[in-house]
Amino acid sequence: MDDQWRISKHDPEWKSLFNDIASKLRTSLGELAIRIDHVGSTSVVGLDAKPIIDIQISILNYDDILIYKTKIEQVGFVLREENPDKTKRYFREVLGTRRTHIHVRQAGSFSEQVTLLFRDYLRLHPADCLRYAQEKHQLMDLYKNERPKYVEGKGPIVWDILNSVRLTNSYGSSLYWLGRTV
Image (cartoon, rainbow, N blue to C red; front, side):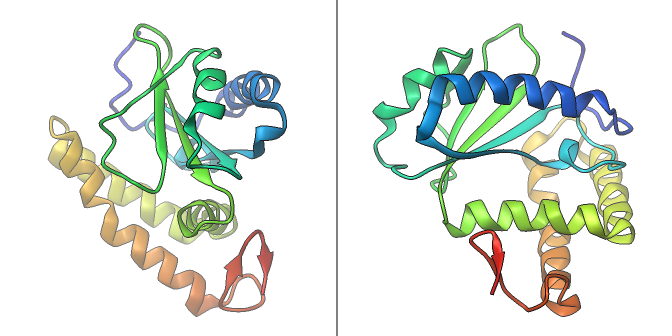
């Protein structure tokens, strides 16, 4: 596998890669997955991104990991037990295969919804999308060999953009919750 720790121009193939993996996950998980979404920068057309597909799986019974862990592993992903983010279960590709991140979250949770909101907002606001891409390039230049610092460095701009969602009232009100405008 080539080095995927770089920022690339948007590749339309990312959508096909997501669709292929999502189809396999849907077959394996069935009704356990309330929704399977392409999230992260590769899900936003025109946004420069690390060529890593991020997939969010929304589960009703998040705490009962035994009901979905094996089904995700059957598709070729491994649970990363050491994940410090307690809002999700994190699965990664089997060593030697294309880099993919699977984020399993409680359906309706704040973390599930904010991920979708951020993606949807960037899809509709090219200026903020460009601003986010520029910041990612700067952070990659600064922290190319320090992944945790790169990830942590994105925090301020992510929160600034999420604040823009509230300020611009993009969805008809200041709240976009549980997949609908409130």
